[in-house]
Image (tube, rainbow, N blue to C red):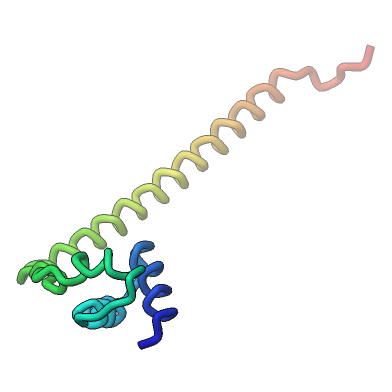
Length: 111
């Protein structure tokens, strides 16, 4: 077995970046009876009986995920609508202020 690969997989595992296949490879490696002494402390970690058991997602998991995605899309659209509405309101207010202040200015202000 390539010990360099196992140590790189261990580094990847501790960074939570391994795939399920890589984790299976680690479990398979640590199921051996003889291991290098520097890797022995990790043996207990990878030999637990529930190491490969993943919790079931349930029947409604996909439905809940899709509902949450749709809610986030609606919120994003509402935020965009509110931002656009605020921008239009600011432009209208600035134009009104500009028109009102320019209408009170005397036409000929030559002294």
